[in-house]
Length: 186
Image (cartoon, rainbow, N blue to C red; front, side, top):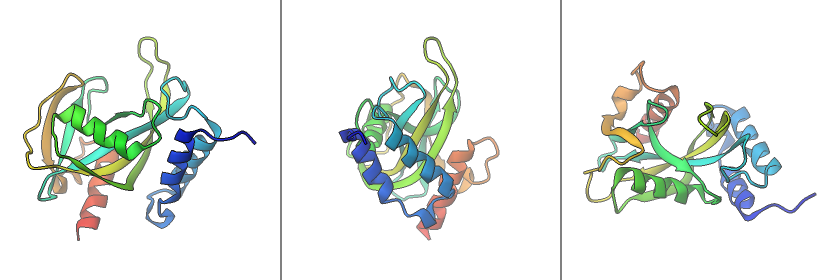
């Protein structure tokens, strides 16, 4: 058996802490673990079949709102996040991406995995169609909620989590995270 890379070890350590009873679909957790074990370059964009990404469920100070981005490439309202670029510390990736994409500072990340989502990214220019194995983390806003729209977004907006649950236009994974957040907040 080949030795695993540092990034693989970090991803597998995060996945080992995921409570299988709290995962919306246990088969998704198994897919994530299998992918991490089988691909030494699982955190690199050069892994053409797919790679790990880190995303932020960026919540407001009162916990009632979440910051979403109107993603420029995918043209959908989604959580902030992006590529690991070699790092297996996906909580730090989520935090970094939240800061870069929102212009907010003073953010903090909860290191426990909040959600897992595997989704297909369509082919684009020189990139073939591939999978994103997205690990999502709760990120909390700091003292200011005044964001800045960056080049990766058409727009950013604070949305009430309670409204996202029933928003038929929202991405299903965003709706799922909204349901999880509301259950957790009780």
